[in-house]
Length: 78
Image 1 (cartoon, helix red, strand yellow):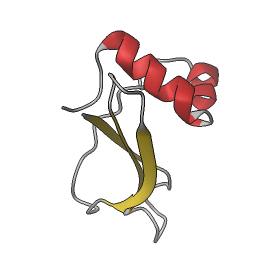
Image 2: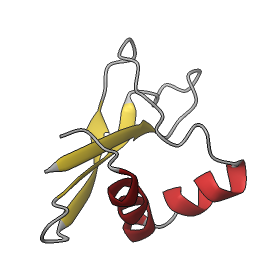
Image 3: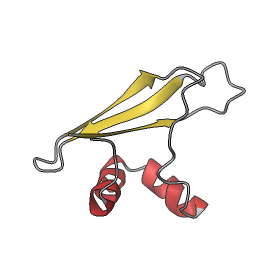
Image 4: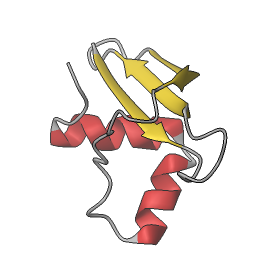
């Protein structure tokens, strides 16, 4: 089982603690995506930070492509 969380709102937003969370099984290809609470003080690692903005936006708009990207690179928390 792997997971990934990212901030959807900018730091100045009152909704900053509302994040997107994914959990998936690489073997069976089942995944779940939800809005999750992450405290403001918790720093989330941005696994997509090194990508050009267009590639990053494309992946964040397509859950299946995002999970395939992570699986192909062995990313996501276990």
